[in-house]
Image 1 (cartoon, helix red, strand yellow):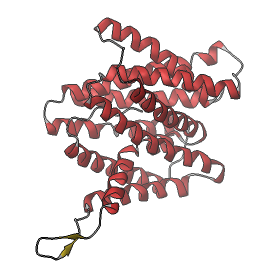
Image 2 (cartoon, helix red, strand yellow):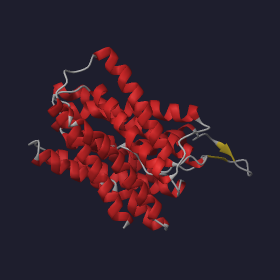
Image 3 (cartoon, one colour):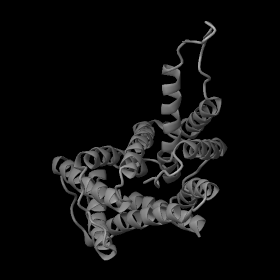
Image 4 (cartoon, one colour):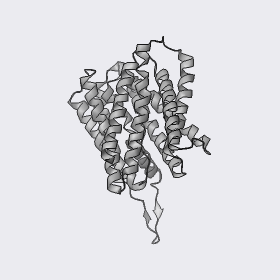
Length: 307
């Protein structure tokens, strides 16, 4: 069942991408971040109340920092979805595991200093070859996806898509820190929704609200609901995975969201993905799975990722 919960969560997040893509014709990224936050606040408050989960926290600063990074990632992702093929934007956002691996490689390189041994010989700590290969594979996939399939007008959106994955990696590391000090994931997601609403309102105050139309506004509802439901499904998947192998399977099945997004992209939006684009997507999925396996070995009880 944990596998089905993860696949369902990935499907819901990909479906949220469809709603964002459609709503972007009438609303700015800031407005969509705002309404995702507002809808998430109401939904999660009701759910927390029904389950008896307190939303009071002793760590407001940590939640504020996590929300700030997460909102930057979310806004960049929504912009990328609006201005790029859905499959490309979603795949770039799923690069967060590869970025985490890149951070680890960077740290290993900085620490790769000569270490004198007991016998007087100078040695160096070994570099993590699997991590290096994972990172190189992931970024090779990015080159294949962006170079042939993104025209010059989508270059900025491509950079923001990469930024969404990078900042999602930072946000995930903060989620891990909150999980280690005992914060319930529902509380963490609630404060992220609150931060999204505040940041979206501030951004929209500068850019201005779009002209309201109820038929258009209805597309904002699934953005918030599908995001909240998708996160709950992923959390349930991790909670019901009792073994290390089960957790690895669950963590890797999140990449089925890229497959769902590719299906939506081709069928609903008539996007064309050439052979290089499909190859790049496959490389990013493979590197993401490898990075997830390596991460789970380091942090075996890691919480679910958010999108």
